[in-house]
Amino acid sequence: MTTKAQSAQIQNGVNVDQLVGTVNAIKGTPSLAKFSFRSASRWGGGAKSTAYMKSFYGAGQEDSSRTEAFSMEGDEPPVLLGTNTAPNAVEALLSALAGCMTVAFIYPASAQGVRVESLEYEIDGDVDLQGFLQLSDKIRPGLQSIRVRAHVKADAPREKIQELLEHAAKTSVVMDTIRNPVPVRVELA
Image (cartoon, rainbow, N blue to C red; front, side, top):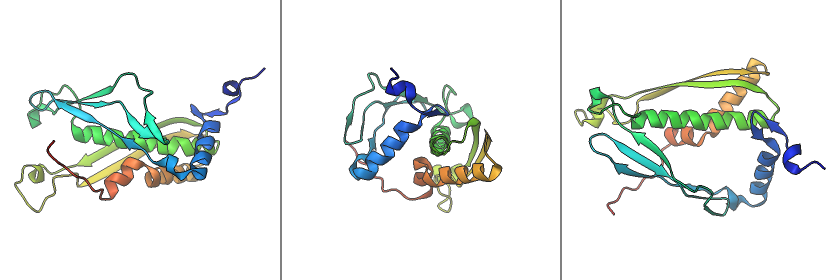
């Protein structure tokens, strides 16, 4: 007897049957699409910090599938007064963009039967520290530009790969967050 797991359609490491099931469940119950992700951090001296991610809310319930928190170290290079023990926050942001763009590319490619052999992103972001250091009120403290270059090897014509890349850029949660203002409230606990 064949089990459901054995007969699942897997493409690019993605369970396409489960992906389609998730999309259909959200179509039937749109509230399942509401997620709330969380991160906490602790300062470690100097430029060092550690971020922790464990629980989140999604698919109509609190998720408790993670028995331990993930952690991500942060630091700065020596030229920015750090000790170079971990990526800085901007590098973490750019890597988050790469991770989100990967999912936003691979899921639809898999659903459409495109076999992806390799997918790599090179992402550069430019910042002028005059804004961060408050040396100029004409320069924002954030990134001034981001460039994303995708390297894709897949069994699809270049036009199809370009279409999937444009879809990823359009639907990536992190890309949308970077491109569009998001209300942020900062308060002292």
